[in-house]
Image 1 (cartoon, rainbow, N blue to C red):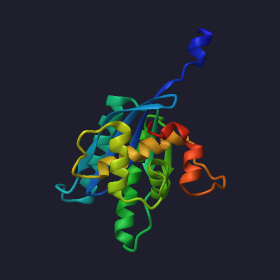
Image 2: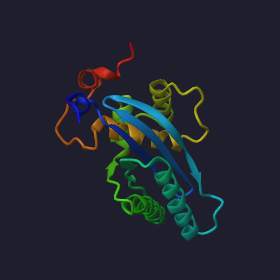
Image 3: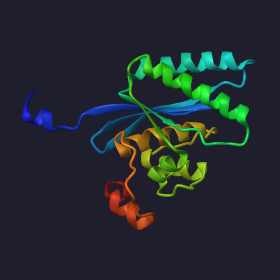
Image 4: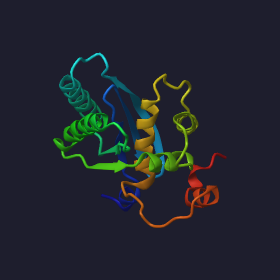
Amino acid sequence: MSKEQEKAPKEKIILGIDPGTNVMGYGVILTEGKKYKLLQYGVIHLKKYETHELKLKKIFERITGILEEFMPDSVALEAPFFGVNVQSMLKLGRAQGVAMAAALARDIPITEYSPKKVKQSVTGNGNASKEQVAAMLQTLFSITELPKMLDATDALAVALCHHFHDGRIQTKGRNAGWKSFIEENPDRLKK
């Protein structure tokens, strides 16, 4: 391997997943150094399946198909937020676990990000709405038309968050606000 080849950034494929029991979003990006490119994103519709067990089976099958098609180097998932309904949280946790199992069966590393961390990474605001996240992704990836279901853009945001953090969840104390965000991410400014 030449010195130029050693210095060249390695291409990586990242699969981002926004877990859900009725709709599960996914987004696949290709990265090389600081550059990134959208490969595919969409949703897995699960409402039509009558039982939770059948939904879990379909999640496993569809995520396995995406893994086989794109052969990602890593998988990033949005960690579930804690809600009031225990049954919903249990079902969401199972859906996330099945998606994780599909990746783990192929020895693909997994990283989880909180919804707030994903929003902060993509928009600079940890409290951004789904629509704000989607609008930022539309700009960053030059997407002409956003999907009707924003679970797809949420998953794409998870993949992009993983790229920005290079798989490392940052726990160091950081200053909040736009000034800090711009200082830490000069390459993300549109010129």
